[in-house]
Every structure is written in structure tokens, then in C-alpha cells.
Length: 103
Image (cartoon, rainbow, N blue to C red; front, side, top):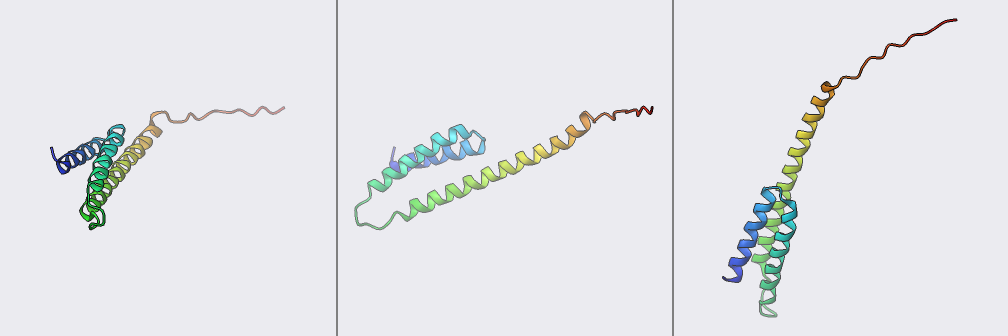
């Protein structure tokens, strides 16, 4: 398999992990992707043009991942807010009767 094909496979793994909220797998997939990018940069000839396509690919992947995580976070916050609103009605606070004794 070529380096570019392995890198694309790593991209797919990373996107799949982010999309499925498997954040423990995201770290491993991101490390694998980084290894493939480092390898692609290391094999370029010295003094050659900078690897702009790799930089664009990495930037796009990072932006997509950030957007997906922010959307998941907003969804989780929305669910939390909905549950918090419902839980207020589950156990209403009791009204305690108090008596004042004069004398």
C-alpha cells in the first residue's frame, strides 16, 4: 500500500472515531495520521516546494474534527439542559410546616 493510501486510511479511521464519539480511539487514530504525515514530509526532497497539499489536508481534517466535537458538545449540553428541567419536577421540594409557639 502506498504512503498516500495509508494516510487516507488513517483519515478515515480518525473521522470514524470522531463521528462515533469514541474519543479514546481518536487519540490513537490522530497519532497514526501524524506518523503518516511525518513520513510523507520526511520523504520529500530537501529544498523542494513545501507540502501544501498535506498542510491543506491536515487543516481540513482538524477543522472538521473541531466542528464535529463542538456539535457533539452542544448536543450533549442540550440534552443535559432538558434532563435538568425534567428533574426539577421529579422530586419537588417539600413545603415544611413550621409552628411558632408563643409563651
